[in-house]
Length: 385
Ligand code: PLP
Image 1 (cartoon, protein in one colour):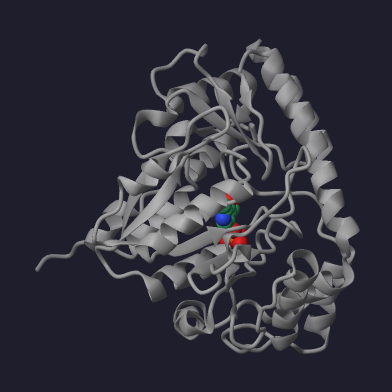
Image 2 (cartoon, rainbow, N blue to C red):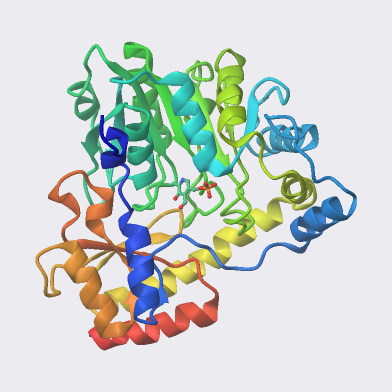
């Protein structure tokens, strides 16, 4: 035996997103690469957390989260989606959606299990599968609507297929899965007895009248669906690390045990803050998010159109994939570096979202920025015209 890293390290490389953030800082650019939404945190959420700190709520919590937060999450699902969730047995609060996803994968997947992933994908889904020894297999969504057919799913099935991952609204495509598409996925999952693991962290960022639907809302899907979501985006608290998983109690206790093992619990006073936000902020707040980000989307996509980087206009989330075919460079990394060096705006190379060369002509911009920053980014991008 010699000193060496584990074999696992090979599949958990530094993400392209972090790499571009580092390049951006080096060149003093505006960072539209990372999904760090830097819009203000609602006052009730901040006050809820600071009151909790002052009141001494600074110790470990139950590994599945404080009861008041789990009750508030259950209340939200009842109010917005008409779903009845058992707050005590079906919700695990974790260290962000990322922590929830890792705990879910650990609880449900064996090494060697295959998991179907739509691409373009969110890189953490794929890297987390690798970290658990599971094998992602890919369905490439077709532009312009990021569509797919049942046959695209059927041809990937083997005896090792255990789950399919949905991300709606999706990062980076902005795709909002329709009832018909989710119905197709549900029928497929039932036919092959698969879990549907659905990342819904952008559920409140919806444009052009798009409606959020979870596969869990479809008839007969509750037992096999695991919802993963969180507050990073909705309350602009990416650094707080509060997310959750919702699933049938048959799976929830094991998800909770892994959550306990990895994180012990999510930060106690910050759980109180988001619980207060959930209780006090009404539908107007969520509608306001879609309006505010919809306006940012429109402004940003118009600029991309104007400089010939045709945007795939997203229907949800807060990213836009832009077609960079006309820019110099062979790879999307070269094209993203060209954009950074010419305009001082950082994006993510499209290769970060595909397992093969599918993303070569894309870069992804994040438009979840304060208006002054976004306006300056738009002005700078004009240099590419
Ligand atoms: N899921 C998706 C699809 C994301 O885009 C992100 C962040 O960019 C996350 C999860 C991370 O969520 P959290 O901050 O709650 O871990």
